[in-house]
Length: 499
Image 1: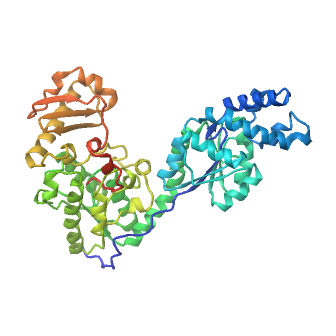
Image 2: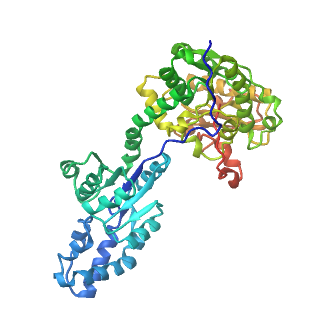
Image 3: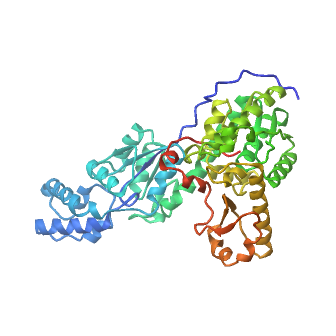
């Protein structure tokens, strides 16, 4: 195949896709202050001698405090009474405030997509900040004293494009700012009221927000991916056969055409034979040329030593093998299936090794998360959309124990034999790992199958070559070997990706 060669870009690659700026209301969206609100009104009633129905007030949270105070006090006393309430709130409400269900995860999902979080609330800004600190939620900006239309100015100032709230006033503010109004039916307004007020999306609660956000962002990120691949011109895809690289390979063929794309699966002792066969079949069905160049990780001392940076040497070997191959084929870029989650998934030095050697990461650059890769793969009808993660065999060997062909083969035989035994016993296991802890084989299976496997020691007899076999009671955990690393290494921020 001959493809006109284009100038390669620098190793740093293009800027990554910008994440969304998401705004959230506070009370009854991120924060549940109701218990404290009732206590604060009780204290205010005792202080002023005015009877106040705190339960009713707590059920109307959303509008500015002064509107509620005006229900109980004459106009000339509203300002001073509201000030007294806020002082009492800090004492009686703040310590007992709780995060709303799903609030922390909703904020985390925005971060996961590379976004920023802005709280725009009718609550006083000092109490809003103190409340967020109390419930342990960190945001990028807080704008207080805002309700309905007055929220719009703050949203515009911070470039908020999505705003989530529980009140019809939040919908008014979002639309005035040109933002998408996402309503959650967790406050005083019902789902029907929120829909009637013009909410673009109505969710039962914030627990549903992360899935909605991922789906909402997906079309734009697929367009971004296509544009980035088109800009690369031609690519050699580091194709392990997993969900990420299979999706990337498919996207490259859809964008560039099969004549400008080649798949390369590194053939070595660390790749299970079943994975190589599956990769070969996938590439054939896609109609793309598939090569299986041999890599020699064992020739690298750092790989054999199996320290915490083992993946660095593996990825260095891979990219240093693929780059000359790409050159010989006239392909401009080597690309890997690293996704946006990989870049923040703890200690994974392989990403650094590949980046240093000029490999490009279109999925990461387009901001595509693992969940989005799987969802897009499902929409495209790819067989790999729900394929379990299948890291290289070396990832099963505990750090500090030398990697050797014999150890890799022992792990591969153990996993293959145990899968056959489990299937024969009628135990449906999706994820399975045999961790080599020298003389001990630690078996990880899906958490819901741990007890069943532990009760069947006869099935563990399929594992040969180990002195002892145990079932990990915590079940399967991707990257569990990293739990044995010092905390400083896990938090170093060095990312990597499996083959």
